[in-house]
Image (cartoon, rainbow, N blue to C red):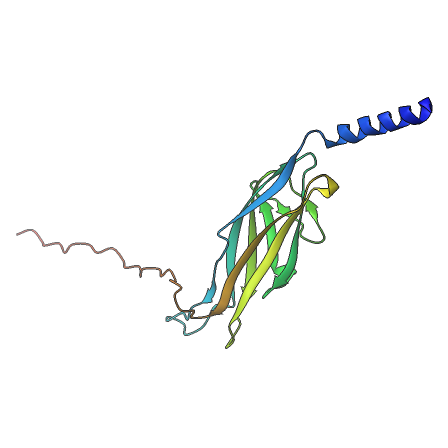
Length: 170
């Protein structure tokens, strides 16, 4: 009986030891929504072949560091998404990768949809295993040519500098 009681107490001690320390994962995306607008270029009369948007991800969580994965992508292929850390290193999005707390850029490239419009969405999931619950953030946007309500930045035309006329000495 004493041996059985000792085993139970020892099991409880190890179980409570495993629960100490660490912080649960959290994630925030900024912006959470961004449109993929393909504006007509008046100079060439053509639409861009691709449009890229970057979502800044702020990730927290430790002991263990969470793994990141993209769930249920709509409107793009996972191969068209890249994740870079604050040092500019690419993080693999195939399967899941460990991401220490920090700031990351999720860049998604979308090809020209031609005459159709659609939506983009994906759930970004952090998982620290059984120790903590999973954390998620959703990003989304519209995809299309000349989307209404989207302000497309224009580049002002460059004009060569003018030199004042010189008058010959009299």
